[in-house]
Image 1: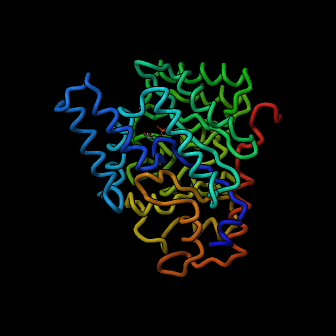
Image 2: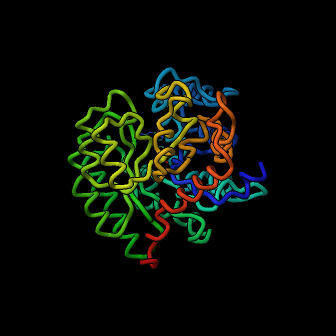
Image 3: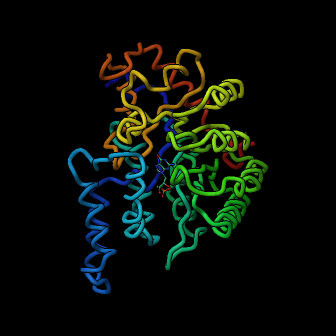
Length: 338
Ligand code: 5GP
């Protein structure tokens, strides 16, 4: 473990609300459920209890397919919808990755989807997250603002307006992400917003080809936005792979996430192999440590472990992977750096 602990590396694909420590989630749920104003037998409360039971299983929730995963978030969102909860969650997640005796990484790029609630606008949500992010040096953390494929145009407008305002105040937003239910949404609607984000100097990363239901057209459209990095990229066709290789788009690789969501059946068949062979930029990432019960050190351990448990790479090869992750970060895009 010492080699992996010391290894310089960047975590570039970690979703805030998918990375909440279970104990904090349980505390937030019991606080929410004990509020006198809530009817304890409402269907909403029952769904919170059911999602919490699944998330609390010793090995994490059992997922039959990737789509099951997205059903866990409505409950998480209900109990993290106040500024106080968002602050506590962000603090806890940054501590896991960066503090203590075994920091997981040298640099963390945390991502989150701005959410409006009764007590917060999307801009206020981002301000709470940024306040915690900026309590660490810029060399250690940056924030990526996620846009959800399901967002309506008004929500997109609202997010972009907040990003523009916060960047003008030199707040530490370094990139934009496209995430959410893999087959939903009208991608063309996102084009002007991504173009605007690029003009602001932000990096762009998109979740792409995560499932076999993602069409070649979906992939082509996402690549036409000219992203700097790609999330998952599990089911790229030959045409897409040649674009990715030619443009040297970094692929964010989440091994445990892919195995547990059953989009990859075995590490032996994981698409990481083709990128390792061609020395293509990749970053090893956790995705969502809450449901996947992993850590960045755990993901790197999978690189070192011999087959069939891991990929059997040498320490030199793993060192190179760490370097590639740092080289692909959006750190330089923090305000004041360009
Ligand atoms: P948040 O953005 O609320 O901090 O983190 C949770 C959100 O990230 C989820 O609601 C979902 O939209 C997105 N997300 C987390 N993991 C994945 C993933 O593996 N694939 C996709 N497409 N979206 C994800």
